Image (cartoon, rainbow, N blue to C red; front, side):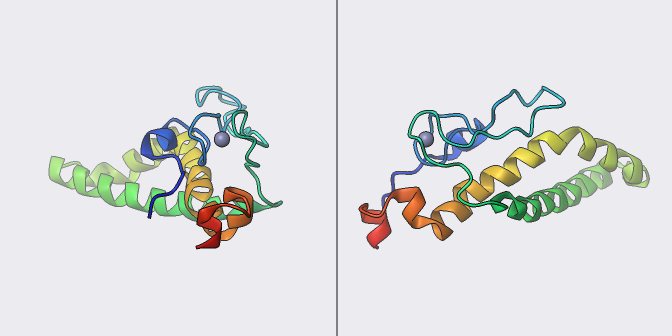
Length: 133
Ligand SMILES: [Zn+2]
């Protein structure tokens, strides 16, 4: 099934899940205090980036899953390198430094996966082919 949705490159670029051109986040990921600010709508296609209040609460579950996967992979790597005894210190420090990415990927997964499934009318528009499938 062909859809008019953005792909993996747009995801990692923090772009709109529909057109892949407008930015989802207002500031750079390196701006420490403002990396969480999210645009209300896409600057290119005017897609609402928060279909309802509290939509991004679900991003916590995605972030949790990402961090569990990260912890498992880092535990395996540290074990293979012979530093598993220091994993208790190394992994939390790495998690703190990856939090801006994990936060954004959690929100982007909500926009890229949950949004088109739960809010078809807002995402595709009621007259589109995808909405009527
Ligand atoms: Zn867009």
